Amino acid sequence: MPVFKDIASLRQWRQSLRGTLAFVPTMGNLHEGHMALVRLAAARAEQVLVSIYVNPLQFGPNEDFAQYPRSLDKDLQQLHAAGCSTVFTPDDALMYPHGRKDLSIIIPPHSLTKVLCGASRPGHFAGVCTVVNKLLQMVQPEILILGEKDYQQLRIVQQMVADMNMTTQILPGPVQREADGLAYSSRNARLSPSERQMAPLLAATLFDLVQRSTPQASIAELAQAGRDSLEQVGFVVDYLELRDSDTLQAVNVARPGARWFTAAHLGQTRLIDNVMIPL
Ligand code: AMP
Image 1 (cartoon, protein in one colour):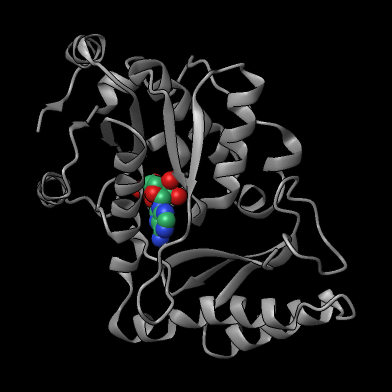
Image 2 (cartoon, helix red, strand yellow):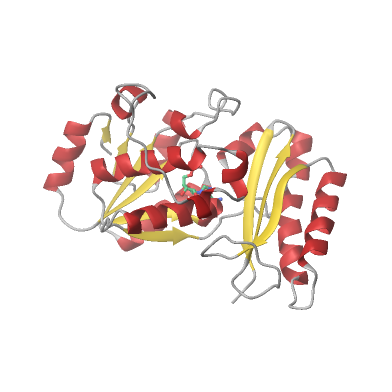
């Protein structure tokens, strides 16, 4: 399994490829959520490229960039076993040769970035779009695979690809969960044993809200009840909101296709999740 660290060898490989290439960008510390995306990629394309890069541009000054879990050797073993064809592991010097200063930045649309995670993580989605744009220019995939776990990120990258007239097709993969419902996340590794026991309540709350989201229900009351049950057991809730799956605008009357979104801290760890009201 070739592991490219520089653009020249990646491009040479790309030019020699026959068939469709699907690209799965990741920040490493791979888990079942990532591996499901790799399998989806392999089912849709002859070649699969996974990138592993912890992008400093998408972390705020007080966020967990330094503590973000990194496990490259284990990641490569997993990818090899899963039949991944190729891996790209750029470093900061390759991605941002001039540092963070004087960099051309992609600014995604305000309406999609001012809400949810964008409200509490200013600049985060500009960092995401900038790195995804750079990776797409380097890799030139026909298909880009993104997880619905980071649903706002998915919508924003879809909008960027459309706005920039890129030809890459985006294929979303559903949220993968542990047996107790907790969405797989690289950050789960940072939960203490007691926090790990509490963590599935985040998903359970969303599934419960989805059940209770009838057209007659008061969405504000449901959101407050959900917040209360999370805060009772020690979560610090950043947001818990029902929003439109396309525009991400607030929804006041429940309808199929709308989506409950949450972000909450458990100790030092920020967890996010979302569940759609079934169509
Ligand atoms: P990350 O390494 O966290 O940047 O994630 C890389 C890709 O994997 C993104 O497209 C994520 O949305 C996706 N992903 C992460 N966790 C999950 C999960 N539990 N289920 C589905 N996709 C996921």
